[in-house]
Amino acid sequence: MNWETLILFCSATAALAISPGPDNIYVLVQSLTKSRNHALATVAGLMTGCIIHTTLLAFGISAIIQANEHLFLGIKILGAIYLLYLAYKVYKSGNNISIDTDNAPKKSLKQLFVQGFFMNVLNPKVTIFFLAFFPAFLFSDTLNTVIQFYVLGGLFILVSFIIFSTIALMAGFIKDYTLSHKNSGVVFKWLQIVVFVGIAIFILL
Image 1 (cartoon, rainbow, N blue to C red):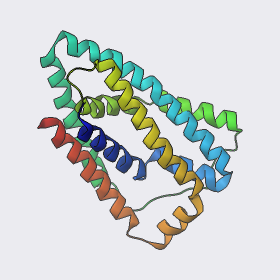
Image 2: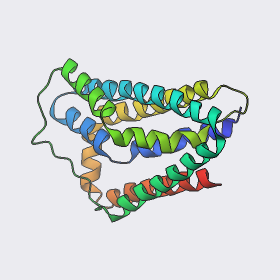
Image 3: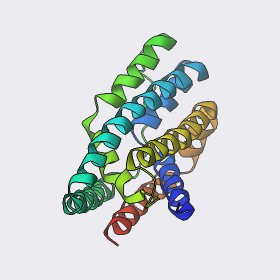
Protein backbone atom coordinates (compact mmCIF):
# COMPACT_ATOMS: atom_id res chain seq x y z
CA MET A 1 0.00 0.00 0.00
CA ASN A 2 1.34 3.41 -1.02
CA TRP A 3 0.67 5.76 1.91
CA GLU A 4 2.25 8.72 0.07
CA THR A 5 -0.44 8.43 -2.60
CA LEU A 6 -3.19 8.50 0.02
CA ILE A 7 -1.64 11.51 1.75
CA LEU A 8 -1.39 13.32 -1.60
CA PHE A 9 -5.02 12.44 -2.33
CA CYS A 10 -6.16 13.85 1.02
CA SER A 11 -4.09 17.01 0.50
CA ALA A 12 -5.54 17.59 -2.97
CA THR A 13 -9.06 16.96 -1.66
CA ALA A 14 -8.53 19.43 1.17
CA ALA A 15 -7.23 22.11 -1.20
CA LEU A 16 -10.23 21.66 -3.47
CA ALA A 17 -12.70 21.69 -0.56
CA ILE A 18 -11.22 24.91 0.83
CA SER A 19 -11.32 26.70 -2.52
CA PRO A 20 -14.60 28.62 -2.99
CA GLY A 21 -17.06 26.78 -5.21
CA PRO A 22 -20.86 26.40 -5.56
CA ASP A 23 -21.15 23.78 -2.80
CA ASN A 24 -19.12 25.39 -0.03
CA ILE A 25 -20.47 28.86 -0.86
CA TYR A 26 -23.99 27.42 -0.52
CA VAL A 27 -23.04 25.92 2.85
CA LEU A 28 -21.61 29.27 3.95
CA VAL A 29 -24.81 31.09 2.93
CA GLN A 30 -27.00 28.61 4.83
CA SER A 31 -24.94 29.17 7.97
CA LEU A 32 -25.07 32.94 7.63
CA THR A 33 -28.79 33.21 6.84
CA LYS A 34 -30.27 30.34 8.88
CA SER A 35 -28.09 28.49 11.37
CA ARG A 36 -25.10 26.20 11.67
CA ASN A 37 -27.45 23.22 11.91
CA HIS A 38 -29.02 24.13 8.57
CA ALA A 39 -25.58 24.36 6.99
CA LEU A 40 -24.52 21.03 8.52
CA ALA A 41 -27.70 19.40 7.16
CA THR A 42 -26.70 20.60 3.70
CA VAL A 43 -23.18 19.24 4.19
CA ALA A 44 -24.57 15.85 5.25
CA GLY A 45 -26.71 15.73 2.12
CA LEU A 46 -23.83 16.65 -0.17
CA MET A 47 -21.52 14.06 1.36
CA THR A 48 -24.18 11.33 1.23
CA GLY A 49 -24.51 12.02 -2.49
CA CYS A 50 -20.79 11.32 -2.87
CA ILE A 51 -21.43 7.71 -1.81
CA ILE A 52 -23.53 7.23 -4.96
CA HIS A 53 -20.80 8.63 -7.20
CA THR A 54 -18.19 6.50 -5.47
CA THR A 55 -20.27 3.35 -6.00
CA LEU A 56 -20.82 4.06 -9.69
CA LEU A 57 -17.13 4.80 -10.13
CA ALA A 58 -15.92 1.79 -8.14
CA PHE A 59 -17.85 -0.82 -10.06
CA GLY A 60 -17.71 0.86 -13.47
CA ILE A 61 -14.00 1.68 -13.59
CA SER A 62 -13.01 -1.57 -11.89
CA ALA A 63 -14.72 -3.50 -14.68
CA ILE A 64 -12.85 -1.44 -17.29
CA ILE A 65 -9.50 -2.09 -15.58
CA GLN A 66 -10.16 -5.81 -15.59
CA ALA A 67 -11.28 -5.78 -19.23
CA ASN A 68 -8.75 -3.48 -20.87
CA GLU A 69 -5.79 -1.67 -19.31
CA HIS A 70 -5.27 0.42 -22.46
CA LEU A 71 -8.83 1.73 -22.22
CA PHE A 72 -8.19 2.61 -18.58
CA LEU A 73 -5.10 4.55 -19.63
CA GLY A 74 -7.24 6.43 -22.13
CA ILE A 75 -9.68 7.35 -19.37
CA LYS A 76 -6.82 8.68 -17.24
CA ILE A 77 -5.55 10.81 -20.15
CA LEU A 78 -9.04 12.21 -20.73
CA GLY A 79 -9.23 12.86 -16.99
CA ALA A 80 -6.01 14.86 -17.12
CA ILE A 81 -7.35 16.89 -20.05
CA TYR A 82 -10.57 17.57 -18.14
CA LEU A 83 -8.64 18.76 -15.08
CA LEU A 84 -6.56 21.10 -17.25
CA TYR A 85 -9.83 22.41 -18.71
CA LEU A 86 -11.11 23.09 -15.17
CA ALA A 87 -7.87 24.92 -14.39
CA TYR A 88 -8.36 27.04 -17.51
CA LYS A 89 -11.96 27.86 -16.51
CA VAL A 90 -10.79 28.97 -13.06
CA TYR A 91 -8.03 31.06 -14.67
CA LYS A 92 -10.61 32.84 -16.87
CA SER A 93 -12.99 33.45 -13.96
CA GLY A 94 -13.02 36.53 -11.77
CA ASN A 95 -11.01 37.01 -8.59
CA ASN A 96 -13.91 38.01 -6.34
CA ILE A 97 -15.73 35.64 -3.98
CA SER A 98 -19.48 36.31 -4.21
CA ILE A 99 -21.57 35.57 -1.10
CA ASP A 100 -25.22 36.35 -1.92
CA THR A 101 -27.34 36.00 1.22
CA ASP A 102 -30.39 37.86 -0.07
CA ASN A 103 -32.00 34.99 -1.95
CA ALA A 104 -31.19 32.08 0.35
CA PRO A 105 -34.16 29.66 0.43
CA LYS A 106 -35.93 29.04 3.74
CA LYS A 107 -36.07 25.25 4.21
CA SER A 108 -36.22 22.71 7.03
CA LEU A 109 -33.23 20.56 8.04
CA LYS A 110 -34.71 17.56 6.24
CA GLN A 111 -35.37 19.60 3.09
CA LEU A 112 -31.81 20.93 3.11
CA PHE A 113 -30.39 17.41 3.54
CA VAL A 114 -32.48 16.12 0.62
CA GLN A 115 -31.61 19.15 -1.49
CA GLY A 116 -27.89 18.75 -0.77
CA PHE A 117 -28.11 15.06 -1.66
CA PHE A 118 -29.79 15.68 -5.02
CA MET A 119 -27.57 18.71 -5.75
CA ASN A 120 -24.67 16.27 -5.63
CA VAL A 121 -26.18 13.12 -7.17
CA LEU A 122 -27.82 14.84 -10.13
CA ASN A 123 -24.80 16.98 -10.99
CA PRO A 124 -23.02 15.33 -13.96
CA LYS A 125 -19.96 17.48 -13.30
CA VAL A 126 -19.40 15.61 -10.03
CA THR A 127 -19.48 12.29 -11.87
CA ILE A 128 -16.98 13.52 -14.43
CA PHE A 129 -14.75 14.98 -11.73
CA PHE A 130 -14.70 11.73 -9.76
CA LEU A 131 -13.87 9.88 -12.97
CA ALA A 132 -10.97 12.26 -13.63
CA PHE A 133 -9.73 12.50 -10.04
CA PHE A 134 -9.93 9.10 -8.38
CA PRO A 135 -8.23 6.69 -10.85
CA ALA A 136 -4.91 8.52 -10.55
CA PHE A 137 -4.75 7.72 -6.84
CA LEU A 138 -5.17 3.95 -6.82
CA PHE A 139 -2.70 3.06 -4.09
CA SER A 140 -2.15 -0.71 -4.17
CA ASP A 141 -1.13 -3.33 -6.72
CA THR A 142 -2.70 -6.15 -4.70
CA LEU A 143 -5.86 -4.71 -3.12
CA ASN A 144 -9.10 -5.08 -5.10
CA THR A 145 -9.80 -1.89 -7.09
CA VAL A 146 -13.41 -1.71 -5.86
CA ILE A 147 -12.12 -1.56 -2.28
CA GLN A 148 -9.53 1.05 -3.27
CA PHE A 149 -12.17 3.30 -4.83
CA TYR A 150 -14.33 3.00 -1.70
CA VAL A 151 -11.32 3.88 0.47
CA LEU A 152 -10.68 6.94 -1.69
CA GLY A 153 -14.37 7.82 -1.63
CA GLY A 154 -14.43 7.50 2.15
CA LEU A 155 -11.37 9.72 2.52
CA PHE A 156 -12.84 12.26 0.08
CA ILE A 157 -16.09 12.37 2.06
CA LEU A 158 -14.30 12.57 5.43
CA VAL A 159 -11.91 15.37 4.43
CA SER A 160 -14.64 17.33 2.62
CA PHE A 161 -17.06 16.88 5.52
CA ILE A 162 -14.52 18.21 8.02
CA ILE A 163 -13.71 21.26 5.89
CA PHE A 164 -17.31 22.01 4.89
CA SER A 165 -18.41 21.67 8.54
CA THR A 166 -15.62 24.03 9.58
CA ILE A 167 -16.89 26.52 6.98
CA ALA A 168 -20.38 26.20 8.49
CA LEU A 169 -19.11 26.72 12.04
CA MET A 170 -16.85 29.65 11.12
CA ALA A 171 -19.20 31.32 8.61
CA GLY A 172 -19.14 34.75 10.22
CA PHE A 173 -15.36 34.86 10.47
CA ILE A 174 -14.92 33.60 6.89
CA LYS A 175 -17.29 36.24 5.51
CA ASP A 176 -15.56 39.04 7.43
CA TYR A 177 -12.14 37.77 6.33
CA THR A 178 -13.02 37.59 2.63
CA LEU A 179 -14.58 41.06 2.74
CA SER A 180 -11.63 42.63 4.54
CA HIS A 181 -8.92 40.82 2.54
CA LYS A 182 -9.54 41.72 -1.07
CA ASN A 183 -6.73 39.46 -2.31
CA SER A 184 -8.22 36.31 -0.75
CA GLY A 185 -10.11 35.56 -3.96
CA VAL A 186 -6.87 35.65 -5.96
CA VAL A 187 -5.16 33.27 -3.51
CA PHE A 188 -8.02 30.75 -3.62
CA LYS A 189 -8.25 31.06 -7.39
CA TRP A 190 -4.59 30.16 -7.90
CA LEU A 191 -4.82 27.44 -5.28
CA GLN A 192 -7.47 25.76 -7.42
CA ILE A 193 -5.40 26.19 -10.58
CA VAL A 194 -2.29 24.71 -8.97
CA VAL A 195 -4.25 21.72 -7.62
CA PHE A 196 -5.97 20.98 -10.94
CA VAL A 197 -2.77 21.28 -12.96
CA GLY A 198 -0.81 19.32 -10.36
CA ILE A 199 -3.26 16.41 -10.43
CA ALA A 200 -3.32 16.45 -14.23
CA ILE A 201 0.49 16.19 -14.33
CA PHE A 202 0.41 13.44 -11.69
CA ILE A 203 -2.03 11.45 -13.85
CA LEU A 204 0.16 11.74 -16.93
CA LEU A 205 3.44 10.78 -15.22
